[in-house]
Each structure stands twice: as structure tokens, then as C-alpha cells.
Amino acid sequence: MGKFLADFKEFALKGNVIDMAVGVIVGGAFGKIVSSLVNDIIMPVISLVTGGSGYENLKYVIKNGVPAGADGTAAVEEVAIHYGTFIMNIVDFFIIALSIFVAIRIAMKLKKKEEEPAPAPAPEPPSKEEVLLTEIRDILKNQNTK
Image 1 (cartoon, rainbow, N blue to C red):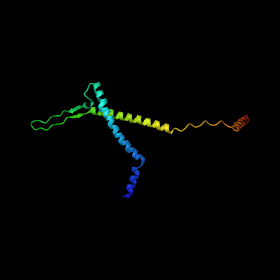
Image 2 (cartoon, one colour):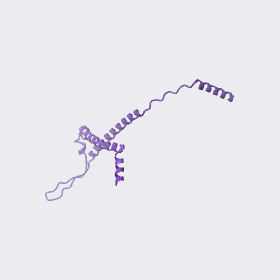
Image 3 (cartoon, one colour):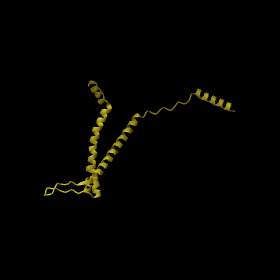
Image 4 (spheres, rainbow, N blue to C red):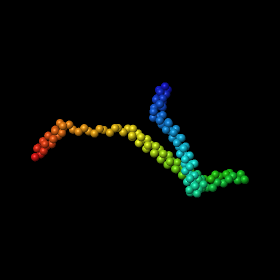
């Protein structure tokens, strides 16, 4: 049992696991912010523009509900497809995906700037000896090809 606990401690204290835990917590809070943005700001504006009472009320009724009867008959719940809620969730997803894309793109640009090495210095011009040797080589090549 001691080896198990030691292995778990080593795993839990790795930097990646802690970073992931922080990411999950921040992501959960970020999800609440985006949901509030969609539900409380974007969707009311969209429903005002479309003249509706709100997307959360949009539904396709398959079977109407029946209230409980006075004679003791049981109530029947309405069966409906709530596509308004689905639309809200799609908008929610796209805002979260766009936000994550922008955040990752900015982080990658910042990381790339940090990792950019200093430009390599220009190569030094060849020494006089190297120039002279190159000229001799070229002269010898020309004589051998004739």
C-alpha cells in the first residue's frame, strides 16, 4: 500500500497534473461566464431582433399535455422537442470554442516570441588565403577541361 501512495503522490505533484487541475477549475468558471453571456445578453438581443419571447421557449410539440381531470384521470405531460435550448447550447459552444482558439493563439505567439533565438551573425567573409585558394582551384578546373 505504501508503494501505491508514493506513486500517487509522485503523479499528483507533477507539474502537468497541477496545471491541468487549475485549467479545469478556470475552465469551469469560464464556462459559467460564457453561459451567462449567451443566456443573459446575446439571446435576449436575438429574441428582440426576431420578435420572439426567447429561444428557450422555442419548441416543437409532438403531443400536447393534458392536465389531471376532476374525475381522477392522470395528467399527461407534454412531449416536445426543445430546439430553442439546443440553439442556445450551440451558440454557447461556438463562443467557448472561439474564446479558447483566441487564447491559445495568443499564448502560442507569446511562446514563439520567447523561444525565438537571436539571429545568427552574418558569416564572415572568406580570408585572403581562402580567396586565393578558390581562384587557384578555378584556374586548375579551367585548364583540365580544355
